[in-house]
Image 1 (cartoon, helix red, strand yellow):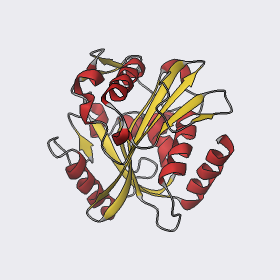
Image 2 (cartoon, rainbow, N blue to C red):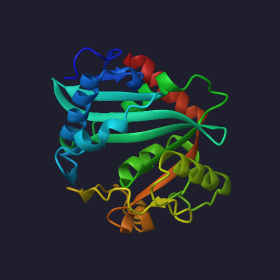
Image 3 (cartoon, rainbow, N blue to C red):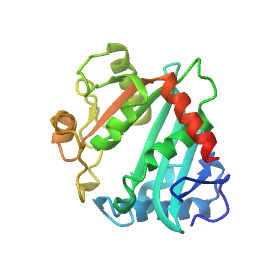
Image 4 (cartoon, rainbow, N blue to C red):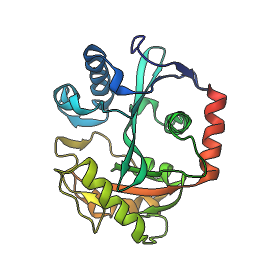
Length: 249
């Protein structure tokens, strides 16, 4: 699957093996090249993109503080998840950088399991939780992540506006994507996915109303856009996730 350069493998209840790489900065050039091949393999089932996109443009994807999870079933790679710990404007953030699951492995709770393992490795103080942030154009991922948060900006559940979170979103956008156009009003990157032609099969939430709210957002009506979300984690949701991770391990 990914070789022997990980920091352990966890078997999920569904029989999925999740390999953990705690610090991407420690990987050798050959190990990084192999991971980029795996990223392309998974993403090619999801996105209409150049088949070697990650291999061409992915050299910057291994900074210090980055954790990588690779999920596989019987050696068939199913998903990858990449998260970073960063401090921006004196605020700690846990940033979900990538989360991609091949279509045939969706609905197997891989987002739940990879999130649990990420929290297990990257959250060590329940009294001082980091901000949680991610960007996406997938409503299933968005609402799954929203369940982990007390508050979020933007919030498709009730439309509440949280100015402090909007400011935090602007800070992280400027720090992580300084060269990319960012719309602070809609919390979106209009050209986040200019290198792809969109999803091969767009995702939809099972609740039509929630799906409609998401797809009416300016970042999503634009085929190359992505919405940036920043939220405060719910300690109870984090505890439940940590308990799940302990069971998996």
